[in-house]
Length: 328
Image (cartoon, rainbow, N blue to C red):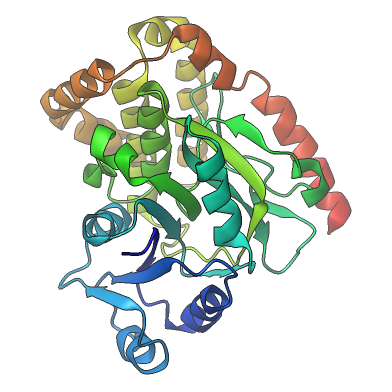
């Protein structure tokens, strides 16, 4: 039985798989299995992997179910005690798994770890150094567009991007899998929040490096993208915020959402807020049940949550923009 299961969700990602799977073959840590979950691809992804990477376990889904459901199927069939998730449009450093494995082995209080994801084409810039969460109710990619040198120190952070992370399997057994109702977008934010509430800390491991191409599977001009993202952000808040936070940050979160709505209207997505709010209203009973379960499992204090919620995200954004322009 392998110690680690590396799960790669794939949808029409044939052009990325050679770099991704070849880099896994070069890992210095070898006690792992690779599981490709194909989300009903219509390209030649399956035949390519079967021919060139026969050691890769393939889970071929009959229909396209989205990121959360695809990853969950991989987790259910995984044999390792540690579950590593990896985007298909990545290339891993040869010590990636070694460093993540050591991080979990050496920190028994840590439930999951975030990698340092570096921009594939601009390798002096961060793509994502884990997930941050601001007091405005917004999740963001830590360090996006900033110089890699600013993110060389390990630290305890809010959460891990599911594009390159590792989790103890017991974490999923305790809090459940990714919320499949999210379909896509913010499901890793939701999982990170639920894990933190249940007492699973997240460690950022900067020497666990992955190079991320960062191709989007969905069009930026998609109406579904906008209303799904808007809906999922509110689901994260409703499910995970303790009652104290709902009162404490209600005004700031409201202002943040007004800004989002105005941006969508400016970009021509007039229907996004209305569709999203209708979907939220439609699912209120189900959301209440989910909230009750999340809060039932909560074992950490408000003081601890305050320590991982970022109060200075807006300042970080300004700094990020400046450094990004400088490096390009």
